[in-house]
Length: 93
Image 1 (cartoon, rainbow, N blue to C red):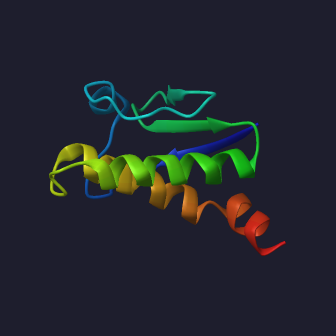
Image 2: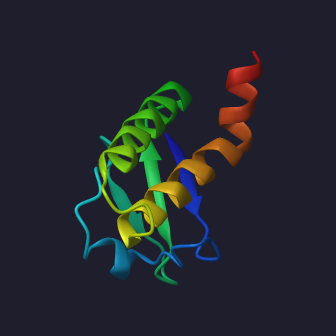
């Protein structure tokens, strides 16, 4: 199980409560809140996280308004996956 936390310090200032207000595609293992309302992405493995990142990127690019909250949330999710140390190691191997 791979768990990736999305920083609340990104452009979307993302919290789990805020995420629930939007129709963002979810990972196959879902989103989970931390006690502090931070968003945790859950995956079976690194490849699943990468595949999900591509799906979220496609979703973001399909949006008409690239300044919308949904677009910013998608960007924060993609950044969290890209910056994860396990995903980086997987890509490099």
